[in-house]
Amino acid sequence: MKTATTAPTNWRNVLTDEERRQLLSTNNWRAWLSIGLNWGLVAVSFAGVVYSPGLLSVVVAIAVIGGRQLGFAVLMHEAAHQTLFANRTLNDWVGNWLCAYPIWADLVPYRKYHLRHHAKNWTDEDPDLDLATKYPVTRASMRRKVWRDLSGQVAWKRIRATLARDLSGAASKSARLNTRSLGGRAPNDSVGIHNLRGVIVTNAILLAVLFALGHPALYLLWVVAWFTTYSLATRIRSIAEHNLVRDPNDELQNSRTTIARWWERLLTAPNRVNFHLEHHLLMTVPYYNLPRMHKILRDRHALEGALLEHGYPGILRRAASAPSR
Picture 1 (spheres, rainbow, N blue to C red):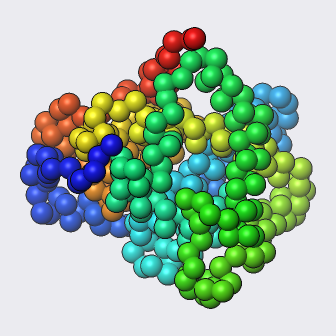
Picture 2 (spheres, rainbow, N blue to C red; picture 1 turned 30 degrees about the horizontal axis):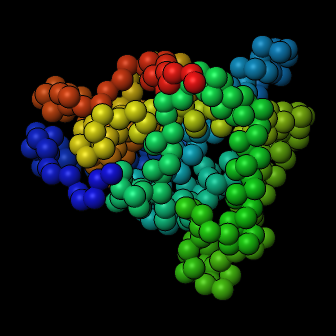
C-alpha cells in the first residue's frame, strides 16, 4: 500500500487560477435545488403508488427511493466537505436535518472518518481500505452479497453497528468524537439515546406528513427501500469508486469516475457521485462542478491513462469475475 503522498501530476497544470476559483465556489441555490429534487423524487415515488397501485409501481418506488436515500447520503458527504453551503452553520444543519438524519446517518461522526479517508487514501490508515479490496469475487459470491442487500441482512448489520456507536460508544471507523460537536454535546455526553433524536424526529415528521395526506402506509416504502435498494445502491457505488484499481500509488488510477447513463444517475449515481476521481483530485469542488472539471481535464488531455468507466455494468462484471474454486 501507499506510504507517502503521490507526486504531483500534470492535471494541476491545466487549470487556470480563475478556473480553479470557479470550480471551488459554492452555490446555495444549486444545493437547495438538489435537496428539493431528491425529496421531489421521493414524493413522486409515493404518488405513483397512490395513483397506480400495484406490484410494478411499488417495485419502481422502492428502487427510486433507495437511490434517493443514497442521494441524501451524497449530500451529507458534501456537507462533510463544507461544500453544500458556504455558511458552516447552515451547511451542517441542512446536511444533518434534511439529508443525514432521515436515512439514519449523522454528519458529525461521518465527517471525522471520511476526511481521514481522503488524507490516508490507499494507505494502511485508510478507514475505507477494506471496502476497496473486497473484489473481484466469484459470481456466486456476488449473488450472495446482492441477496444480503435486498433481503435486509446488510441493513440489520448497519443498524446494530449504528446503535452500538450511538448508544454505547463502541469503537468503529465512524466513532463519535469525544469533544463538543454539532448540537452542543459535551465530552462526557458523546453517546446516549439523544444521538437518535434527529433520526426519530425526521422520520416522525415524514410519517406525520403522509398521515396528514391520508396515506400513512406509504412510509413503509421508505423503510423497505432503506432495508433493500439503498444497501444495494451503496454497494454498487462503493465497488465503482475504488475497487479493481490499476495502481494505488497513482492518483489518476486509484479512484474511478464512471460516466453514468440517466437511469444509472437515477438509481445508483445521484448528485454526481460518479465523478469520484475528480472528487479525490480536488475534494472541495462541489458536486455540481465536477462534470465541468471532468470536461476541462479531459479536453486538455489530463485524464489520459486515468481510471474511467462508461456505465456500471462493466465494472460489476469484473467485480464478479474471480474464478470459482
